[in-house]
Amino acid sequence: MSYKIALAGNPNCGKTTLFNELTGSKQHVGNWPGVTVDKKEGVYRKNKELSILDLPGTYSLSPYSAEERIARDYMVEEKPDVVIDIVDGTSMERNLYLTLQIAELGTPMVIAINMMDEVESRGDRIDCEKLAGLLGVPVVPIVARNNKGTDVLMEEAYKVARSGQTPGELDIYDADLYAAIRGNRLTEEQEEMVADLRYTYIAELVKQSVKRKQTAHGETNSDKLDKILTNRVLGLPVFAAIMYLMFACTFSENFLLVPGLPSPGVWLAGIVENLWGALAENVTGLVEGAGASGWIVELITSCLDGIGAVFGFLPLVLVLFLLLSFLEDSGYMARVAFVMDRIFRHFGLSGRSFIPMLMGFGCSVPALMASRTLESDKDRKITMMITPFMSCGAKLPIYAMFAATLFGESNQTLLVFSIYMLGIVVAVIGALVLNKFAFREGASNFIMELPQYRIPTLKSVLIHAWEKVRGFAIKAGTVIFASTVLIWFLSSFNFTGMCQMEDSFLASIGNAIRWIFVPLGFGDWRASVGVVTGWIAKENIVSTFGQLFGGVSQEAIESVSAGEQALPAITQVFTKVSAWSYMAFNLLCMPCFAAVGAIRREMGSWKWTLRAVGFQMVTAYLVALLINILGNLIF
Image (cartoon, rainbow, N blue to C red):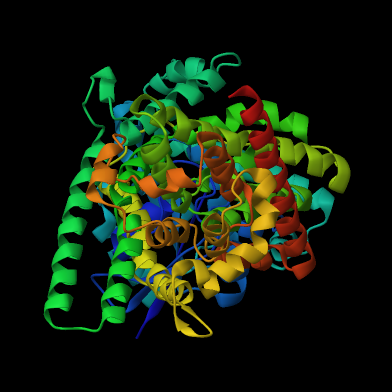
């Protein structure tokens, strides 16, 4: 017989970490609230009878926000066999409020006190047996990220699931009030009274079961760090400096200011580029040696050029996401949202909107999904319209390609940094415009718990980075491969058969739309085609350029000193200014089709989806036009 087990708890209490340990899944784990925005299901690795569901984090079961509704509806309507309530042992008073609400539903439950290592490091002690006696349910101490105590926890959960044991009625309310709670029929006055009674009861539970080393903890290391990282004056400069250092570790040709010392990202990219070049040469040689037709050789060579142009950037993506994962898991990114609240509030948003935007540095699709955690409909819509302005990992190869070809070694880090910062600045200005002309509402309240700083585990950082790189590689092997075949066909044929590229279907399409981009500085038909293929997947721009600008001599490649990822032929079409304009346009314009689909799902209507895409396209055009005009005037 199979049993359903639901994992519930406050945001950032360790639910997803526990879910990954129990099921072997690789869900995103971040040290900030709101990482899980939907329910995820898996099977317990050690007992296939147990199906485990990871519910969104919620502070209560009052159905006000999307994640609260998902959690409450599942527990009330689906009725899992047992709920494992994960409680952060360092914040018992806050976490036990949800515990009481779950117990009041009459659902079989087990309480897991997580982060016991941090509790012990503070010198505190939690008497789990005492707490279990007071609440009438099993209580198990665990450390989810180290997989300590999880076997005992699942044994208890299995016992409760088989027995169907439910929590008894807590000695808090009278019978009528209890019936109103379970029937979800509380009046506003009753809700206030119930909340007071719960907090009073929680205070008594903590008093009897938690022994603290001292009544009030002194200044922690997190407090000391926050004096700098969340400082009103220093917060933003520190964030900018950290981002710049992150890009230096990824792109710098003079790492640690040592001339000729490549950064880890550049060093790994050079290795991958050489390996791919050797592979492509051998494959082409084998095909030619087998006597294949000329068009087959051209097709294979073109596909290898296109896919190779993307694969060469995998190490850069890997290094950047390793560093981003470290910042997320350490708890620093939650501080960035807090710091940005001071700025966002002037533009009609709360700092909570910056969390989906930060997730957009990885991929726009989960970032757009994360916007559902915002309580205000206005905040959700604005955040979804500006989140694609964040530079996702798929856009990174575009910048690296131009940086390696057109910009000197000392300018590559600054170039990529400037593009990422441009996305943030335009997003903030876009929020102001939307709030002023489209919504006209004040900023919503921003209440967010700042988690303790933690040294991320190597496993969690590697899992997060690997998932991003794996998705990048899968896309290169499927969507981009299909695109390269299509691009080869369109660039090699017209109605009369095989032809020169300049007379092909693709050239005709590019020439038909190139006039749109002439004011932006990139009126060449190949650049226009790149914009269009980028809507399928942003990495497609690099693979498209690899095909359309490929075939250059080795001497030409060696004449460009900026790195292995250079495409020298694009210097015939782009200047530094027009390249910057092209990068800005593709940063800000309509995202890939997958992200547009996510906007449609989250917006709930095509009308708002088209408004969002229209806003993004107009913004991209105006910003790129401004860059081209001012850039040519200045330089």
